[in-house]
Amino acid sequence: MFTPIEWKEIPLDEARWQAWAAKGRAQDLQLSATALKAAKWAAIGGMLAAVGFWSHLASFDVVARFVVTAGTMGVMFQAFQTRHYAVAILFGALALLYNPVAPVFGFSGGWQRAVVAASLVPVVASLAWRNARTAS
Image (cartoon, rainbow, N blue to C red; front, top):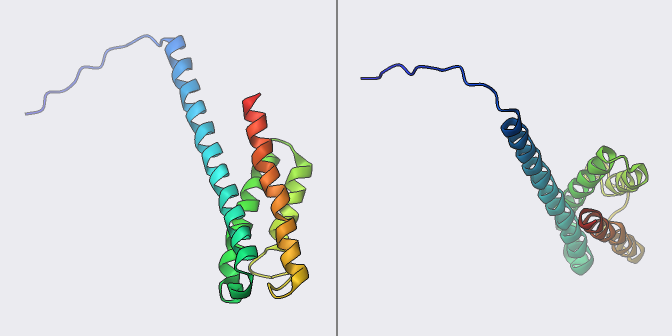
């Protein structure tokens, strides 16, 4: 049979509580950084696939746009949280450019391919920016 557990009044150890809370915050930050990095790499992969398989992209247009938009929006939200508003505006513009619901341009011509290739620059730069910021 089950025996009831006696609960004792245990005094709160403030140092242990603070250490536990700090550990939780560190784990949350690590998890969000990992998720953000995965979103950036997914956006880069989507853009590279778009540039590399340009002639076959018409049938996978919505998938590529969705992947890129999701990655850029993740970076945009993180930039808002860290109060880097110029970066947030840049990635918001990229999210609008690749919007799968209301596309701004089609993946058909040469200049569109150049736009996709040029839009890789800020996403790759954001990977380097994030790494430089966490290293310091």
